[in-house]
Image (cartoon, rainbow, N blue to C red; front, side, top):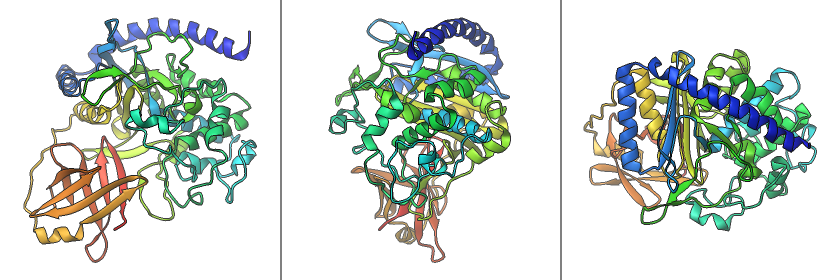
Length: 474
């Protein structure tokens, strides 16, 4: 029996035992969320499903550092009328990145991985570049490694990029994934520029293999999944029989439900290729909060924002984790989106509270739902949007073009309004203060950061509990 066969055989047995145990735990946990909050959560989910037309989703809640409740809604398989449950297994997309980062930091904690050593110390297969690249830079998206060549969404355009719509299966996903980008030039000198990169996490996965002397997925399973009790979490192997795996959906241009574009995610397992259930991801959040995966000092390193030296825009990002706020509560977490999924995990560390939302359709706002649910669990009042009067002459300080990577937001003045133009669509900015604005009727917000002369130098886009800094380029 070879290594891959042993993995699948042992994992299947463990999964089956874990599923039975988890089902009983989930039902026992249902009463840990107060009745009033529970009712508000289900009402928010119902509203979201009606508006988004998402086929199915699963949600889990962590309170006091423990998994308190989880449930499924809608359909995991529309064609065969299979309902989604708390145990339904989804693609988690880029929520794979915190898993990878935690595994890397466990090796760092053990003294086996130097975060600041050149990549070739652990991954000699990666060719030398004009500048050295370190694991720390890769985990913070400062390594200069490119992203996809075309946008991830809409996925119907993915055929122009063999990575976004990859159809080839790789038994060794780290080695196979590196073939796509290893020979490409760097976008910038490492450390100078933020450039979000799933490919960079494939290279970090190679460093994990070199430092641990184990296969990437084996080490993640040993160092993260098993200690956290994540018995349903595994690489997204389209050839394997995966108990309780959902089908994957999308919408066509008319808005009708269709099966999602094909994807074999084996080439990007470290940055976007894991499957999991909502309670499993909640267990990951709980284990992270209780320092069961890495120590508090190591977690603090992961949760420290990485700063590029050029100041040309960035996500609020640490080592594998995004940062932001829900109301006035600071949060960490990560989102994920790819063919057949939109997912979000948000953690409020000080309150020891977390929310996980996993869906089986791309193009839906899982981060928005997660933000609303976290607010309910935290007992925050509903956001009050009270538009104030602002002297329109001040708007000239804010008009211009703001950018991060390929994303641009153009701010213009129309009469006595500020307007945000994104991909040709216009949305009014509703002033909440002189510098703070809400994007139309959404829960997304913009804050202008000004220099000494009062002119904006960048804006902060707060969306789905995460902060993104867009630099003014015009």
